[in-house]
Length: 311
Ligand code: C5P
Image (tube, rainbow, N blue to C red; front, side):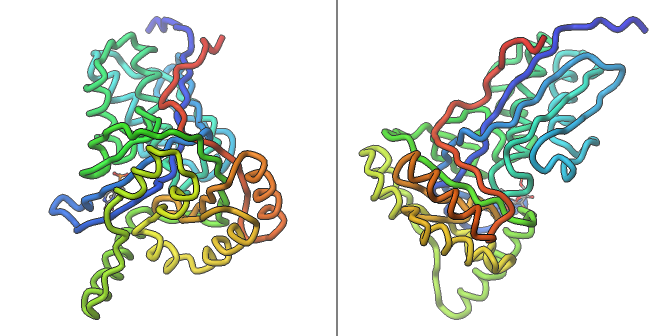
């Protein structure tokens, strides 16, 4: 068969932190109803699509050895979805260059799926409309539509019904990457267990509505933003990974304004006063032995971005 070599296409997508992650009851479809405020971060993965004999995935960068390279990888599924929609054969190589922690609660796999969708749309000249791509994104996973969109947004439903949020200030973060990953379904299961136990004892621990946070974001009031960060999954992540308590305490002791578990964890995200303070906090945490690696990042940043032609 004659293989037509097309120019490679590379796209990058951001990781995220949930400034607010409110979890409601488990739905019949196995997902929880969420109210979440996402902020896209400057930690980005890049996916490069190029011609190959058959569909294949390679990975480099942070945690590459823990990323699957078969059909379970979201980039593989993304290439199949786009190729099928435009009647092409997905004979492509997909290379992922990772910066976002693997299994870290920062939507690393989702970012890869988002970047692959947009890169494949370009590579195959599929011309799929934005809504079609967003529908495919949700088929890949709950966080993938936000990774396509980026910026700062409130998400409801599974987290995919997105509305942009007025966000007046750049937030500077330090991310403490844990030694082990956490499985998102396992953290949600632990959340259900803890909620059932608390309900039996008449205790409610929900973080409630995001209104105060949204007001703080719109006003650009950094200290109010820090006071209103919250994550209903944090107790479940801490229950499965108790050492994270030390990490959270160490970040605050190092001078962060606030710290929380990012999404389903185990990455801990620390909001800092400014870029200089973030550097100081990251240096202190890196020397403290409470995590595997430390990164700084800022946000909000744009969603998927197609890079300059790779050759
Ligand atoms: O959508 P995604 O595949 O990323 O979700 C991974 C898992 O996280 C789901 O299978 C489910 O266990 C849990 N989840 C949930 N409620 C959500 C999103 C994810 O229970 N809104």
